[in-house]
Each structure stands twice: as structure tokens, then as C-alpha cells.
Image (cartoon, rainbow, N blue to C red; front, side, top):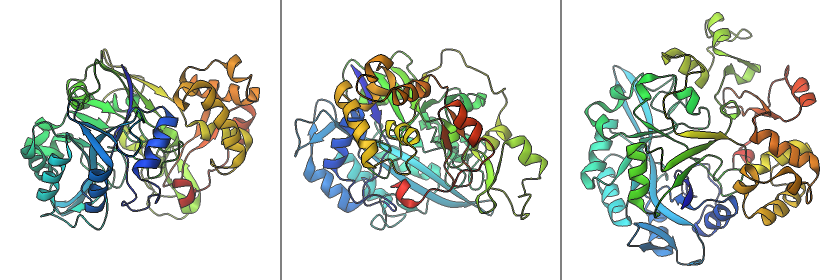
Length: 427
């Protein structure tokens, strides 16, 4: 059974999240995207937990859940959450995000009972906890050995394990004796497997990818995901596949081009300055315009810790595919500013209706077949993204990268700097 899973999302009870992030809308757009398994996110928030208990039914044979309101939906849910631990180490504040998987709402409630001692679970769907990373893992694993803790978006500069401003240099420094319970790392939007392969210390960990989405729209949910081949879709089959780094069952991850992420290159947004690692080092990591410190990008942070060349490929790795959301591709071809514009939907909907879901369009649809229902330039753009012929002007310091699909566009965009997107773009 082929399963595409997005295991890290947020509910409307998390900050800067769409109010439409409810089970009905998540189920609707997850199906359109082509997802089969979705994390609930935010189980630590009391109101969201109550909604999950009222709106989901447990399949006791699989330890997964489905919608009571829409039982016909193929979407299954895994109970998940993200939490933030903030604590001092050697007079420096460490701010680390973690994703938690748990097999039931019952075990989720037990985890929340333990974590509420360390922070207010009501204020945010992604709570801030006054505890160390090892303490978090110990508390979670004492509830059940079927629970899993995974470092979230491990290279994000501000809130992650390897974050340039508040993280660690090794997993062992972060999780100490609890490292034995860490089996996987989430790559995040600004890194992908080849970037992580450059660190030999990460070889034993499974690399997973999730959207960390804050809205239900198909250009957010499932923008990164995991493709599994399972005998049966169950909680423990998913967790066991991740724990064992099983390349027979874990086929590949779906990745956005990491240059598209908001923190790929080093830069300074206020001065419209961005640069690759070598150039940043030449400038002493200072903005050449104003002299302030640059925000170190993921590319530079990996360069600092890497012990392998950029083209290194480990033996028998889990695969990956670099894709972009279909709405993003259509938006770029049309030259419009919003993925939800009517023009975009008028192209998106016939494609999805024809081929069944968005992933099928992005991964499998033939150009000739797509060209029968949409402009051939749209079909060509989808193929170019699939074959990694599109170029992305790297993002930096909170500014998304900019997509250039065709040769002329790549020439025109090369000397320019991308504009910062608004909160509406994020939602």
C-alpha cells in the first residue's frame, strides 16, 4: 500500500495559523493533495484535544483515527504535536522545537498531564516549555515506549537542534543520554537529504519531511511529505519504518527545493542583501551595506558542520524528489501574486480532477495528457519542476526564494533580490 504522509501540521490554535485549520478542511484538502496520512498537530492544546476527541474515531486495529463527520474520507490521522523547549546552557538560551508522535488520544492526554508542569498549554498550540530536551524525551517515553520524539526542522536558524542562533553542534549535545530514543530528524523547508548527508554523524538517523503547515490550502499542506510502502497502514508500521530506517518501506521524501526556504542563504532583509556561505565569510558575516550581523542561512550552517563534500551520497539512502506545489507552479507561469487567485484555480482544478490528486499531476502525469486540458506552457512548467530544470533564487533572512521556470525568466531574475512575502502568503 502506497502511503503519502504529512506528519507535522498545526491547528488553528497555534499562532499565525488559519482559522480554517479544522478536521473538515484538513481532510478535504489533504485528499485533494493526495495525502493518505496526516498528523493532527497540537494535541497538547486543550481545546484542540477536545475537538479531536469529538470529531475523530479510533481504528483500534491500526491506532490511527478517521473523521466521524466524513467517515467516507480516505484520510487517516496520527496523533501528533510540536512543542518548544527553551532553557539555558552555558549562559546561552537554547530554543529547540520537537515533534511528538503518540499512538492514541489516551497516551496524548498522559503526555499533556506531564508537560503542563513545565508550561502553559492553553496559550498556544505549540507550547513553550521550561525544560531541557532530555527532560522532554524522558517524560514522553515514560508514558509509552511507542511514543516517538523527532527534532523538528533541524536547521532553522532560530528554533531548532542545529539552529545557528540557539541550537547545538551535535545531537548528543542536545539530547545527551536520551539520544538513544532519537531515531529521525525532520529536514525542514530549508534543507533536504543531500545537505544532511554531508554530516557523517547523521548517517544513523532517518530523514523525514513534513509541511509544518499553518493553513489547509494545497500549496501549504503536503508541500513536503513522506512516501511509504506498507503492508498495512498502522501507527506502529509507520513508526517502525522510521525507527529502522527501512529503505524497503520508506521509498522517498517529497522536498521543496531548499533554496525556496526563507533561510537558505545568509543575508540581511532590510538591506536586500543575500549571499552564499563563502561570500558571507569573506564579509565577516557582516552586512556590507549597514555593517550589522547577517542572518546565517542553513547553507552556511551546514558548511560549518559538514565533514563531507556537497556531492556526497551515502550507501543505500532513502530517496527524495524535489517538487513544488502545483499552485506555486501555475502562479509563476501566470505571473499573478496569489496562489488562490481564480485564474490559478481554473487551471488547478481541471488538472486535479483529471488525474485524481495533486501528487499524481506533479509526479506521474504525462505532458501530452496535461496539454489536452491546460495550456502547454503550464504542462511544460510542471515537467521542468519534476526534472529539476527550474531555478530558484535562494531565500534569505525570512524572505522566500523565487521561482524561475524558463530560461529567459532565469536570466531576468538572476541579478534581482526576492521581495518579502506577507503574512497572507504564509497563511
